[in-house]
Length: 77
Length: 203
Image 1 (cartoon, rainbow over the protein chains, first blue to last red):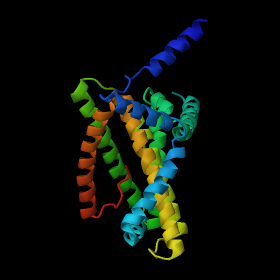
Image 2 (tube, one colour):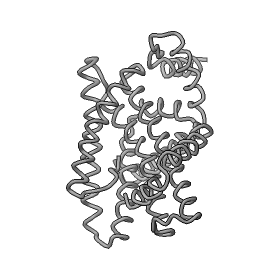
Image 3 (cartoon, one colour):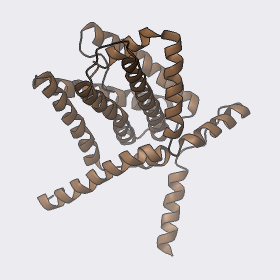
Image 4 (spheres, helix red, strand yellow):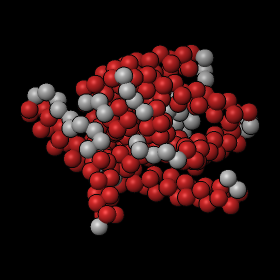
């Protein structure tokens, strides 16, 4: 029983170690919470499609320059 | 500490580094919260050791053994300045801050960087870049760009969580401090290009 209580206390301290985020404006805070709730677990479900979309938009904007730029960055190690 | 205890401690730390690296992919929020309360310094040493092994790998490709030591020195300088930057601002802004929390969380944010550089170097060996505008050349570069952006977004997410759990700051304060950090980083990057040190900083 004591062990359970101790673990519960530890867990509570862990969860409330930082204050809740408040962005000042109600709808901003609501959107922030909505977006971050998806990023807390397996964020790559959202990050990978977003990356493909960004890459596609960048290609539409920059065209061949983007391909040459990416080739250049491959020497960046 | 006798050698047996050290071995056991090392294995436990290694196991924790591997487990947390996987957990940072699956549940970054919960994992970074746990990392911010960490006190096992062996984990940082293990992370740095993996980074040094990567630099050795690069030195092997470039055929210059001194390269790995120079790169490791530059990396340690960059990392130290980054930790001190965020910790320093944390102390100035709120008169409190746990240095070790910054150290541990920011050490784990090196994981995306490590993954990107390792994959990039391996791909460089397997498919050397030739900048062709053929269909396959374009396709490969677009795939590589998407992969790089995924890693970049993951990195931003981890850095945000690292600062959030180490400092307890709100979203906007983190954003302002991060923008300030990016301005400093931009000048550093520009200098590194000017002196031909590196194209992409290991950060």
